[in-house]
Picture 1: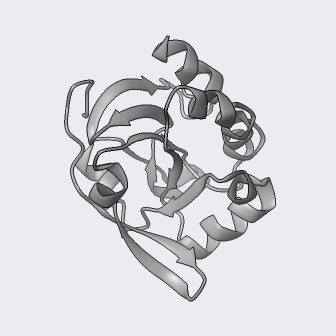
Picture 2 (picture 1 turned 180 degrees about the vertical axis):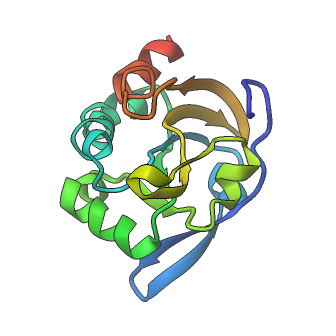
Length: 162
């Protein structure tokens, strides 16, 4: 599992751009930049929709004041769902980048995958938030229970950043 001090592995993620699906190299997003990445088990799921995404919309300006260049929301949903969810929550309008890790490649590589077939969630991410500086994990806030959103909420990550 990824830890503070580790370099994040590169990954190809997907977003919906002006002309449809676009491949995004995570290393390009991270090189020489301060980035917050927060991951959710699923778009439109209760805690993700009503608590996690809104917490980063609320705190976006506070992150910017701390020198954060970009906030990325990551989930195992397909890029079309992520795009619609970003529009539905106001995350896209707030400037949060909605990235799809549909094959769970990045999530697997950092040891954050979970499966809950009893509720229809396969190849999903545990709930976490991290501050990454030039590709290195500086702060990592992981929830013990994917249904909780305290440590990994915008406010929780800001507090951990000091």
